[in-house]
Length: 63
Image (cartoon, rainbow, N blue to C red; front, side, top):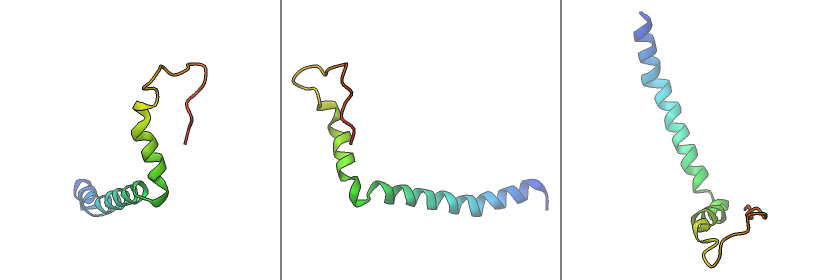
């Protein structure tokens, strides 16, 4: 078996499987129960200093 065929077979099977598992792991990680507060904070970061500019000397609160 030549090198190209071997690498093509490897990419078609194992790399596809590993990328699918990686994608599913990321989806599960994003939708985990404890992530709601983190996502809510990230969604509202643009509105954090809506009334007045933020203070440069104090860092923003991290979740």
